[in-house]
Amino acid sequence: MDLTDWMFTLYPYAKSLHIMAVLSWMAGLFYLPRLFVYHVEQAEKVPESLSIFVTMEDKLHRLIMRPAMTVTWGAGLFMVMTPGIVDWSSVWPWSKAFGVLGMTWFHYWLLMRQRDFAAGKNRLTGRRYRMMNEVPTLLMVVIVVSVIFKF
Image 1 (tube, rainbow, N blue to C red):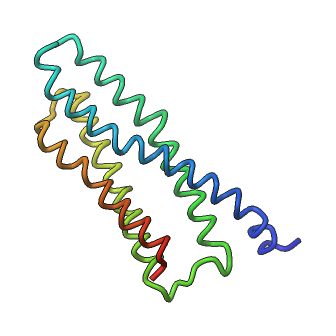
Image 2: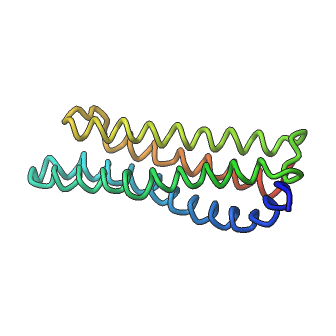
């Protein structure tokens, strides 16, 4: 069995793993900004809650989001490197790549905000976090439409 045959054999497993990892990553990308909203708006009212929010935010990122993003990228790269799967002359792989890079940027933007909270240096409002919570939804639309319609 040569490398191409091996990759075709593993492709459905990589695709399944990719979908599961994306679901986990997206859950974190949706939930962490909501935690930030509650952190900003409730921590002033209940000062003891600060350490609870910091712990929740850290564990969500470190134990769920980071591993899910890593598996998403790994399985995704395996799939696009499988010969004959992606038509690189089409628009869709490039629009999907744009969306995935945007999701990755947003992930790291959240990480920087998480570090700000942990250091007591957050400067954003709950409203701003609510607005930023729409970013992964818009990127998800770009990614899903790209993959399903394959223009």
